[in-house]
Image 1: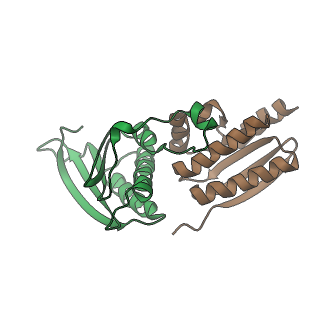
Image 2: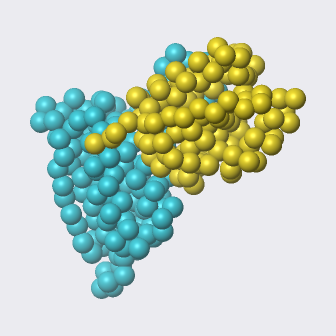
Image 3: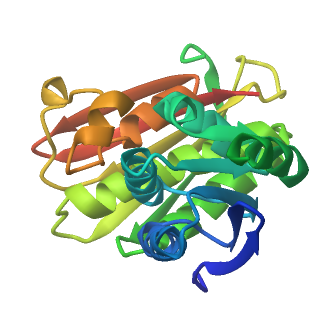
Length: 119
Length: 147
């Protein structure tokens, strides 16, 4: 039923943006983690997850996002989110994720702040 | 909301399997939309249903391999206007002891090896009323959302 999560990555000056398209479940979460850890290995310490193409997530997928946040804290990096649906944003607040990862309304606002913070 | 009467009721049965939560979600969201629930609330219903299904898939160990969905449109007795939706997700699995559930905290979760256990907290945060009944006969998660 689920065709799987599709990911795209854009490398910018000082940060990398991961675009998701589809359901973030266990499989989708693992794919995001693989992309995020690959970008960390390339030297990107600031990652932005643009969830504009994701309307459904589940707690298994989010638990993998928590693993990525933990890793980013460990390496003094930063994971941020943008373009969340109101329900996904509310869920992140219920779980307390917003204390450890910034949430931006859109990519422009995120990039402006993250690039300023990285320089 | 629990004092309201049932205006309309539907029962569906699904086979417990990976990603069946998306089918159950679609049914619940369709019913929520049909009573003109706002888009944001429909999405919250959908997320809560996904979490209840995942708990059943992962933990119920139901011998019949089935999950039962109940959808009840709620309203005042004698009035036709819907006032909310009651969603029941039920399995006939092994059940669990609700008193032993410890609500997760992100500060502990970040340091823990196992980062799971968020389902019920998410459901309670998204729905207006939640009641979990569990025992040897299985588990029922009853969730209410006002219009």
